[in-house]
Image 1 (cartoon, rainbow, N blue to C red):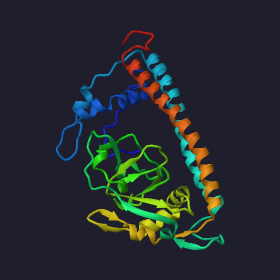
Image 2 (tube, one colour):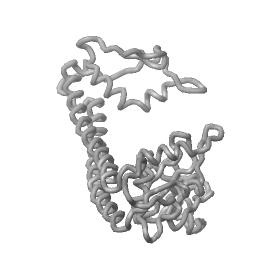
Image 3 (cartoon, rainbow, N blue to C red):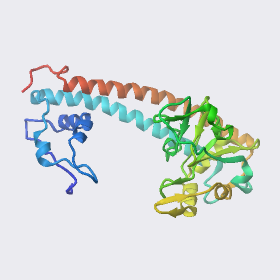
Image 4 (cartoon, rainbow, N blue to C red):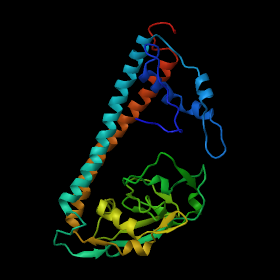
Length: 306
């Protein structure tokens, strides 16, 4: 494989440094390596700087043993991540199995507009998010392209200053109305118990009493809906936008509520599996980081440094 000028290709000396050991050390010290970069427009690390970086170097056999320990743990983490991905794929498969492919409308259910299936839409608050506050605020980065609410990077606002219409509750769907052309239209259902605020680049969509938010969110995450959204968005200076009125005009099958609820129940079961997998993955991530620190501090070495 060829590399361009943006790479510094490190070629290990045979029997002196193991390639896997070197790769794990580089990954573990990414922040330190980034701090060595220079440049105004973008950071670059020179060949001279890279050559002067010091690395703990046990014996070659010990390097291979350490790399094997980290590799085994990393492989288990990868399998756990793949399991979560497979559960996401299974949710999409269940949707297609129960409701058919929305791009070809092979069912006999009537075709309506999204606006016919919902109680209301509401743009998020224009208040600026801040590092601290008593009410978490969801921003467009908290809605993933795969249809998840990601709470790992939250900012906050004040509950007393937040209007109730800017609060999202369990079962509400969040729609990212403004983003780059490839990311506009990201959608996810909120399943949490605690109320959250949501920012102005998001639209809160609430299903009416005859429909279920899980069905709506799953529809918006089908490949068909994503194609529709990409084709309808308007781009201005690198940003794309889809407003609430346009969202409500999208065609969708009106599925019986009982079937929507059955789908929601099946999704709920799979989500519980995903929670368990993610909890185990978090434990594996913590274990891997601990092993890295111990390995490169020499705590896992069986022989002195070379």
